[in-house]
Amino acid sequence: MLHRPALSLAAAGVAACLAMTGCSSGVSDTASASTEIIDAPVSDPADLKIAYFSAGTSNAYLQAAIDEAKKTAGELGADLDVFDGAFDAQVQFDQMQQALTSGKYNAFVVEPNDGNLVCDILTQQAPEKEVLVSVFNLPICGRATNLGEETHQPGTITYVGGQTLDVYQAWVQDVIDSHPDGAKIALVSGPDLNANTLCFFEAAKAFAKVDGFEVVAQQTTDYTTPKAFDAAQTIVQANPDVDVIMSNFSGMTRGVVEAVGNKDVEIYDFGGDTWALENVASGKLTSSVMMLPRLETREAIEAVAEYVQGKDVPVFINLAESDSLPGTPFATKQNVGEFTAEY
Image (cartoon, rainbow, N blue to C red; front, side):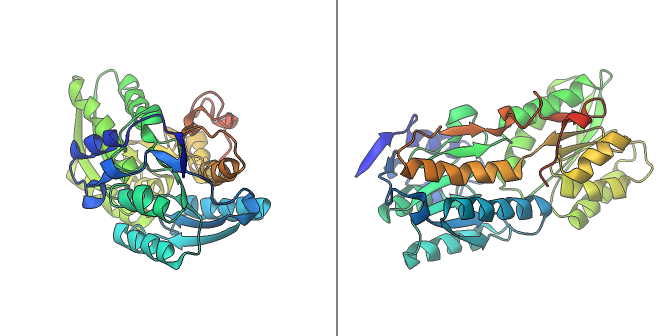
């Protein structure tokens, strides 16, 4: 049986994906996916068997999230197995197929590497196997650059995120506002198909619309410090007059800072880990956008627990409006003391 109609149509996910480049075949049959959430297969959170699909395990952000996932499941009395997606979309897809085939799980909590590739398995195959789905950090089914409740894919319980397109747009606008005479900008992001990369590069198109601004380089990496160092080193060597480097993850920003050295380049960070906040305070970083890996993981798992208890769950949980943030997700030298890092 199905119940609880979702607030938007699955067809919108198809249209959004078809409008984007790089969509995989995972969304081809989305129109036939359930637009309603299946009835909870259990009524007690302690009976949940959760498969937690992490994008990877190779950095502090992901490790903090996994640690929180284990804590949250332990508090609920639920079973939880962690799957390391290794920042490889096909690896993660195969893990989901194997988890479904095993019949061991009644809930998937998912941080997708490619939200399009896993669309069908999460919206068609999982419901058919009576598996609940909660998504966090990265939207699925072509919804990467959607806003608000449109980041949520009907048929899943919720989408938990704080890195939506509007946050990236505000980040870009902050750089524009801070440089009234224009600037040469370089962008460093994660994997190409990652939803955060899609949002970042989409938001950065605003630079071309403002006189005096030019994006001189755009690099993608695997989110690691060494790869970011290589990317930033290439950028500063090829563009000695670059004014600003925007780094889409604090782990990468470490490599950017090392590559820039004593050059007169402003570095804008997205991540807000302990290291980033310390370097905002010291002036090595101009600012940092806060990310909340522990909170987003906890919210995604607790959403499943609340659903099986019959509670209403928001289809979109916006971390950018969290009480954990002091009114803004932007940490600067002036307000950095108001922020606490989660990792």
